[in-house]
Image (cartoon, rainbow, N blue to C red; front, side):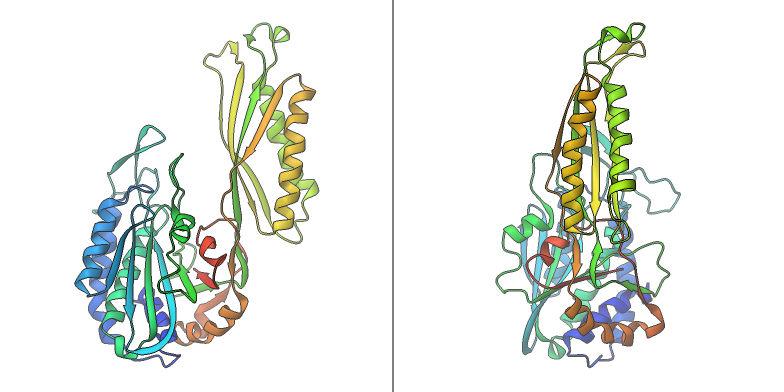
Length: 381
């Protein structure tokens, strides 16, 4: 955990204009708290836009530090404002706070047994994406910074963001709603930083990439309509399950035969398909849910255009109908190259140059990108 806390020293070193003040005692003092917070949050996870107890825990901590706070931002978000003793820029530090509808399969003493409601069903809930650690790290950073305001040039805005994993259907949420509600204003934020732990990254190593670092994501729905018939007489109906299989197969040819993958990666995945009630009845309709991941906006436009052309055409070829609908999704997580270049020496000094690794882009997605659409931002692993 000490090497994770070097992230906090990195932030403070940057805010103190690269002077890198000696804060070993402060970080040693908060280390056990960070571990305790993380385990408690891990054991008590909450789904997107439902992070009520998590927000209370964050609020209580920031209040104890004398940090000015705003609550109820984008439903359950918490924002803290800490003013340094010297004039300077406004720097935002962001941590996401929601968990996922995932069953935890281990025997840790602090494992989650929590339940929640997702899309009308009771589901297990787990911090399977590391947001529990992100919260604990930022709470620790807030404590250290609050004790060193004499060294801070400017203002720090702590953004504890809900619903990074996506708001429930029919609701707004996440970074997009925070921006809409003015989280980057009053005071106006100049730059923003975010981090994400990663089990493939060795402890103590920081991975980064200038430019497009994580993919834009667009979810989609495909509604296929056929004609119901008995399974013993398929000629009397139109099989939407067969059509769906052909659509899924066809979509993959856009990636394998039309996308210029030598430029950037792209992925189309159908993650859910539902239709039918019995083994011997061809159903009338099928619904599919999927995701499109792109690292180039030109490629995203081309792939979406081809999907819109291909899906109804394939269905028509087999006598059916199909409608494709895209959701807005997240933009590309774009790390401002100038900001990365400016901050890289501080990262290398704190973590050691040998522990700072240039990464390739990944096809995962992050709604941190909504902040980066408005101001320069840097997200790293």
